[in-house]
Length: 39
Image (cartoon, rainbow, N blue to C red; front, side, top):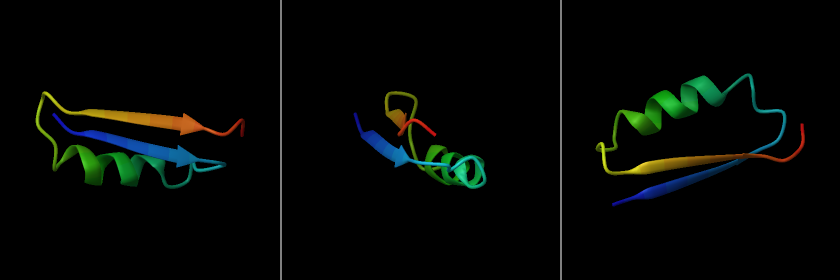
């Protein structure tokens, strides 16, 4: 199992591209955690 953590602040412009790139490389058992720093 792999966990990918993304810390973002005002990242709405790029988050879709980031997630698409990451999810393409992961398996169903892996997880992605996105943390928005209050933006």
